Length: 58
Image (cartoon, rainbow, N blue to C red; front, side, top):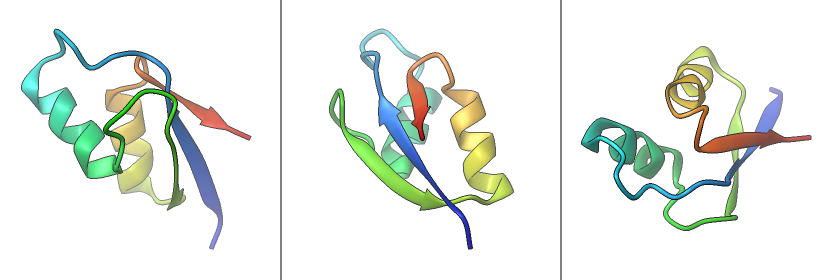
């Protein structure tokens, strides 16, 4: 299965609680951390929800 790497590039300060929980579910707790997940529709939806805070690393 294909994987994607997700990097947090903006701070979670002043974000709504649901976006903070989405970052936690993705495993992103600090800036500039990179996590790798399987490329599934659920993960893509989570990334889409916090797209202003993260980038997808190629």
